[in-house]
Length: 126
Image (tube, rainbow, N blue to C red; front, side, top):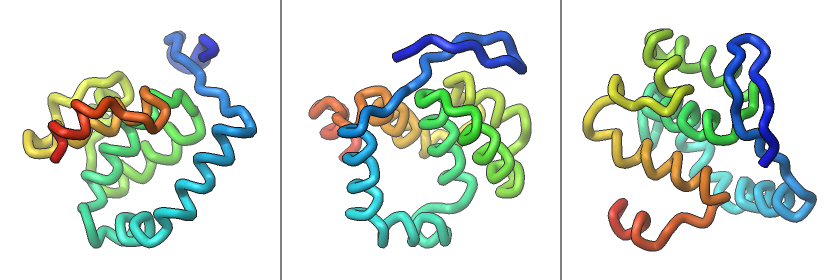
């Protein structure tokens, strides 16, 4: 991971850089789970607020300013407050509903582990 500076905040973050192999794996995962992604995008599985909380937790790990911008806008449109969005982008989940905390922590762990979560974390999720 490369350390980078977020120009608008002065904060340092770990910039995730894909290799050809990891990019191919990510794209294959998208296609393998397209039906699930469509259902989630339509709000059929979880509501839009919960979906954007997850996306913001993952975005913080990945450090992509474009994803941060896009998901912040989507989260605002879904009804999240700017304060909660700011908290999620710093890894703080205290404003999220209690019943969503495990999923948010797992999403963060999944992103941090490069899609290879610890088996113990998977067991706790189930």
